[in-house]
Amino acid sequence: MTSFPSRRPSTQPSGDPTVATLLTWLLPGAGHFYIGRAGFGLAAFVLVQGLYLLGLKLSGGMGFEFLQAELRSLLAPALAPELGNLGALVYHVREYGFGPGFPRPFPDTIVLGSTLTAVSGVLNICLMCHAHFEARLPKQQSSGSRSPALAVLAAWAVPGLGHFLQGRRLRALLVFVGLVGLLVLGTWLAEGSNLSRERHYYYWGGQVMGGLPALLLESLWGGRVVGAPIPYAEGGLVIASVAGMLNILAMLDVFGWSEARYLAGSEPAAEAGAAAAGGEASA
Amino acid sequence: MNDLGTHLLLFAALSAVIVLMSCFFSEAEDGPALRAFPKRLIVYFIGCGILTGLLLLFEHTLASVS
Image 1 (cartoon, helix red, strand yellow):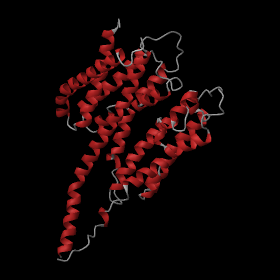
Image 2 (cartoon, chains in turn brown, orange; image 1 turned 30 degrees about the vertical axis):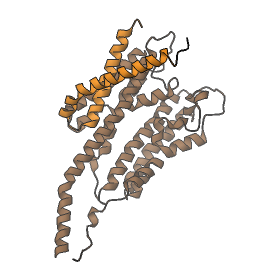
Image 3 (spheres, chains in turn orange, cyan; image 1 turned 90 degrees about the vertical axis):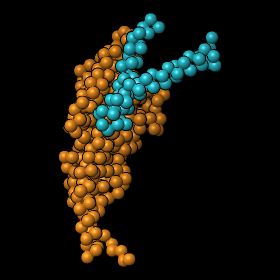
């Protein structure tokens, strides 16, 4: 029996998802250039990399000097949200590192700057999700507003929002109440002492995965001077940090849901394409 | 240990959210996820109880410094 090669150029994936993801990790937007979406890639690069560079400017590149001397090592900065933007993180470490080796005053805008570099890392993780998914779609096809990456971004921004946008209202409510409740509980127990990257570098990295509620709490109660022992400071710190990290599970959950729904919705089209190709082959 | 009750209450609150998120992560539909919640929570408590017992045991034997 003679077999005919399939002629379905429109169903060919745009590229290798792993390559697109790794390229985006190294340089925001590069994965989109690779899959032929140069305009989107350029806009993403300007936004994500621009955010990191602005953060560097505002913090004077001193973000890693928050780390106490005994915690400083080659891989120490990698345990931070900035890891999501690997290229910028490597540049940051090589260019600024841990500073000159002696304490010096931080600029007034270091908190904002340090937050922006962290947010850039988180945004690039969402961009990596986008590049990974788009690479699997046929060329000239885009998931648009149904992209799982948007759900992931929403889930990070406000715990439960990603689920809400997917129409999973009960889950959205429970995730929001559970995670934001823990963030508030932890902050209340620690009397706001948990909301300082300078004081708790790594725990802060966990908390910031709680998205805008964590950043809002920090803008309201962060940076307070601790003048007396706080009985539940450590407990509150752990609870708030765990809340942020649990939101990573919520982000994975919304990605999986959107991905499955989108691919299930694409099945009839794929089947139609396969049937058409089969018809061509039979003819 | 005067505030043991508070500690247990905080542990219960944190555990409930951890287990709830694990249920949601492992089940795509709300119904099965919520039905699995009580059993998973009990297993979690038992596991933590065993771990606590082992830690206390080691604290008073192998790791005792008194």
